Length: 349
Image (cartoon, rainbow, N blue to C red):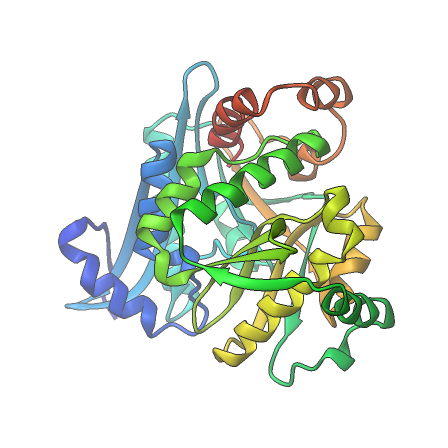
């Protein structure tokens, strides 16, 4: 079979979407809509390579070219998530051809390295010169095919029921004003953790471009919003993206448990087979246990690197260390947290 690999542009968008729709391993992070969010939010160049056999697309691979003055250039497949980055292809030879095309492009651009993130091992990358790099991260996934509160640990079940008795009402909103309310809580949560978070532009672009896949949950008690949870989902998989339920008011009424249980129920009702809880630092067993307490299973996040001029820092290093910077971050006004956080996340990916 003769294969031709080339970059695609907007004129191929419908054909690429049809190919992705037919791929069982595709996620919403492979979609053109997600690429649009990344471009519009951070100004990065997102490139899609496709492999064709005649007029038929038989493989696809996307990578984001991230350029920041003073920091250079790097290619990441795929940034702003740690779940799916491998090519989608009918066989490994096609996938290898797509990776080779990406690597050649990175060399021409003078990129420091190419990084591929995935939730499973990827032997095919070794033949292209990639080396496995420690991530220091795990990802937790909850099966939803027979979801029942009984699958959760005893403490989670108790807190879900207690939240209900305390009058916590979880509702789903499609209001931009409610998204602003959530985002402010999310900024405050990130500041309290000493962790830079995505700025408003990310939320606004997601709202505009992926509204059909965005689920905003808010927890309300006695008329006051005490917590929130943002999920991205399609028929294949639901992803926990951002949460804000660690304030004193939220913890007092178990709002986090109520939010997660509602999100899990909705995903199951929509036919999602699983709910991905995002990543956790391997050095944070308490958070991992909390996620697994819903009936989830954790596995290491894999990072594969093709070093060209340098290698990336360990992904988990963003969660550990930086003690002085985190202490300063916790003291900053939310307006500054928003602006600076946007620039930090723009490069980290």
